[in-house]
Length: 302
Image (cartoon, rainbow, N blue to C red; front, side, top):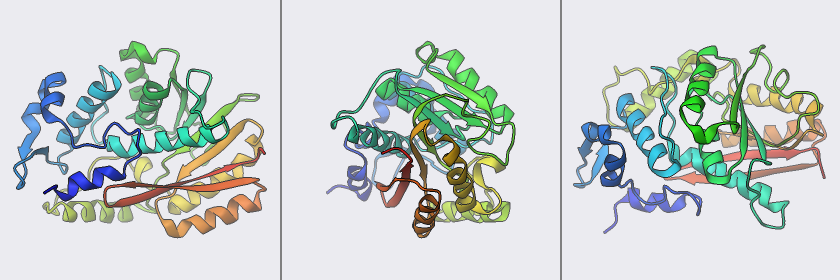
């Protein structure tokens, strides 16, 4: 009888490389240091302690190396270490979005240019997107240390040369302005906006995750700098700024997209995009295990 975890994987995008359970024997073979973090679950299967940031970081290193040929990947301590399968899903569904305007065929190669708003020190979306589809990425960041971390990852992997770059957002109050250059064209923007509206809300969210994993509530969080976890007004305020700024770049970007973690916020995003005159708006639903997520895409181009 399959465990629930095995069933959940089936909900991932059909092209997602992480639809089956992690093959720890294979991962350890490519990244031997992972062996020190492997535990045995009550089901008698190998896993890691997902409440241990060091274990999650090592798993990510192994996954990126095994599945995406990223030989060298690292992030500074206490920066967000995201789950790879869910990040890959967003990329694959974005590929499907582009395929809709390309006779059903996913466009590949360096001619496809993508902006990752808030790329983070981990740079995971550009790594997956380039290695899977050959796309060119620009990442934006307000955090100078995260910018340096991305530059280090790119410099350490020859496959990323001239494929991934990062720009410092000079004004933390802006999202697209100050990043997209005059006349510059992008096929897509993607974004995983700060979810919480305050540091206190972010701490409560971390405690909830730990409780769900049955861990000691004294452990503070799963990693992440304040700018990665929260912003004033939460995700809806961040998205509102993005939507308002997108008008100025409507002829330079084919599709603006952003994750919307709270389904209750989707109608508000539709209202915002309608108010600024977007001519195409759509929601793409995704599912990773028991978690349902989605992104909203809008365009000013017919």
